[in-house]
Image (cartoon, rainbow, N blue to C red; front, top):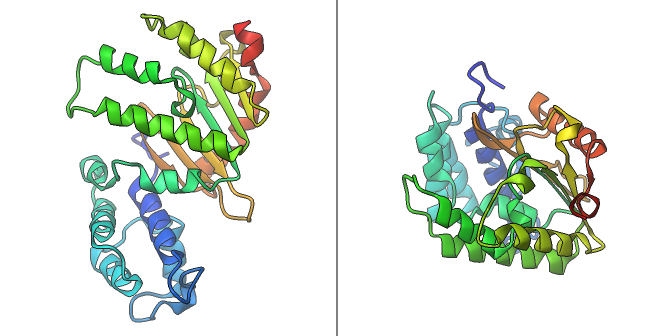
Length: 280
């Protein structure tokens, strides 16, 4: 992490992921998209493109992004989102600019989650969104008193339910680690019971592993972090998205922070117990 506690170069990492996804987008006659070597040298070198896609280039010019997008024949709306991310790489306080670049339907992350071979989640104090019942989203709307922008909770609820249904239909393995604090909150209006019933139902799926990290486990490395870790079966680099009170975003799997999350997840699993054992 940087000296001020933020995740390093979050806009640069997301920009790299999005540019890579756009380069590899299937096209007529090119089912696997473009190779790095296909990009004209007058736009950028293969090495520079490699560094950008890995999130290693901390600053990326808007002109370079526009030239790449022109070559890729990128949709205009996506071009503007990528240009906004490029602009954010030059800003000391990039949060406002970055927020405007994130697609409201979570396109980048969801695109990868839907094709990941294995899903892994951790949250210390909340039920991870993939396994929330609809009543949990209703509770969040009911109890949220202070907000800058009004969130469309009905849309958020439908998004979560559709995402959950896609995961169940795919039968992809999922491991979910939840801090005991998430089950200790008094949610009211029967939501506590609904959460427990829903989570236990999902835990009975043969491809779902839901576990609780009890208070008795004490301090552990992922405490305070919300982490989504996606693994792929084709040798593709894992995708990591992390959030904490100090900031959040995508993290390169090969970075020091990325290696920390990948090593910390199995260690957190070791101190957890099956949710069926905890709730019953």
